[in-house]
Amino acid sequence: MSSTRHFLYPHRSSLSANRPQEILFDANLQEFAQRVGYIASLETGGKLSPKESYQAIESLWQQLSQSHQQL
Image (cartoon, rainbow, N blue to C red):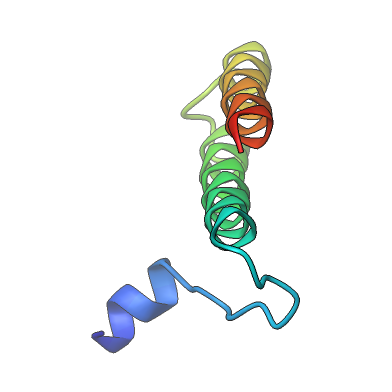
């Protein structure tokens, strides 16, 4: 993995994730956190309104919740 890609898409190994479902949810949670960070940066930079940011994060949260329930 290139250093730039590793910086933009960091993945940590989870010692507590033993089952495939736990590993998958951990990956989903990391992606959620990364996207929330991007949205927050866009809002801080004036590219998204607070309302748009809230709606985007709420949508991501619903997706994360659904993925958790499906596992």
